[in-house]
Amino acid sequence: MSFISRLRAASGLLFGKDIPNINAREGAPTNEMGYRPTPEDAIKYMHRLMWVDPDHRQAILDIRDMDRADGRVKRIHSRIARDTIKGGLIMQQSSPSEVLSREWDDFQRRLQLNRVTKLKSDALGLVKEGNLPMQWVLDSELNVVAGIRMPSETIIPNVSQNGRFLDVTKAYSQIDIMTGTVQANFALWQLTHERYDPDNFDDLGCYGRPFLDASRGVWRKLQMTEEDLVIRRRTRAPQRMSHVLEGASTDEIDKYRAEVEADQYEITTDFYANKKGGVTAVGGDSNLDQIADVVYLLDSFFAGTPLPKGMMGYTDGMARDILEDLKRDYYDEIDVLQDAQCFVYDCGFRLHLMLKGINPDAEEYKITTFERRTETMTQTTDRALKLKALGLPQGMVLEELGYNATIVQERKEWEAKNYDPYPGDESSNPTVKITPGNGRKDESALDITNR
Image (cartoon, rainbow, N blue to C red; front, top):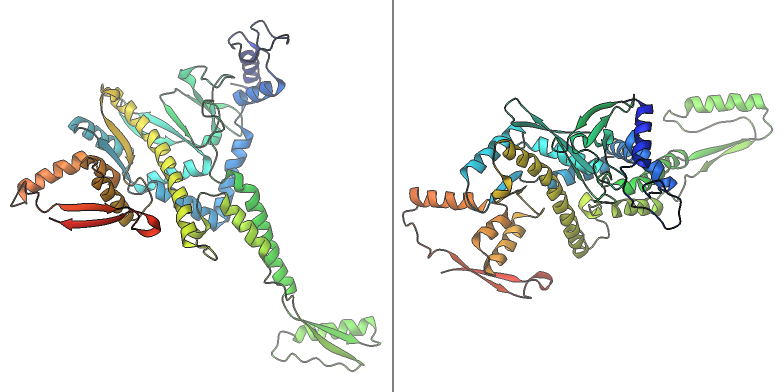
């Protein structure tokens, strides 16, 4: 579709008869359907149909440049992506189903979801772009054989002014940035688009935002200030010599300067002159340790990131308790990212099940990550033991640990049948008790004893 064709289509969709009366005002001039778009709405909507969002595309390009140029940004992205896919994917079932387990294993193997590099690549795309558009590829036997992450800055959602898809058979289009032509159209089932922190979730044409979107300005100032700091140290820190030759002509000064500068890199650093004058040492800048402006920008930059500055190695002046609170906030962000990424894979698996003639709504399952929170094994086990002491079912406790309760129970029964000489003996199970307010920071303490 050419530029003129898209312009005409956008004008017709904006002012045509298919637009409902969503913005009519009493006494205001409207079209025959009673719709009167504001100039801002008209320009925004026409631009949305014709071209990719320039603000979104520029944000992605800036974030990618930051990731390449600054090791701190690269480490932030890598740390978030690594924590998001920590442990890999699992499917939790409330009741065992061999068919569902077999289909999930096949789906996971074909899409390479059992590889950390694939999961981390998708997580990095979600973190850097704020969007995860996944295209599902089918083979001749209607098997979902690939899930390809598309560049979100080239994807246009074909929605109306109220944020709904105009045609689900052409829900998304991919635009060639160089020529402006439509490369491909995708049906709603063919491309799953997950967004992180969109300005309006109900507007399906609204993109998500990268993690460091709002920190781009502070990062530029930080880079500029650090560069200025290096230049200042190179130009003002070295010690200099002031040479005074009384009564010397310009030619004599030039000759003397050439001789001195030719010998200044040798071990001998004394200077001699046959005229009245002197050589005085001029010290370097004594205020080079004053970098409060750099520290301020560094604090401002990390304040806009999900990672606390202390977790990135800047621990000066940070209390341990404050770091613990910041880590909890970071874990909550990781949980949201895990849910967003797993939702995309769940959509692909649902499509696979429907193509196989299996109703996914009739099955009780959940696609999630192995470790829901980025904690140590001791912290996770401590929380699971407390839940066990509160009387929660064993299956829920195992799911809190990240295990599939059904598989654990089957493995336990199999090992009891093949390895345990005393099957069914529960006398060795430990007793867990909780003492409120007796732990660190007034938390609960655990007491585990064997019967």
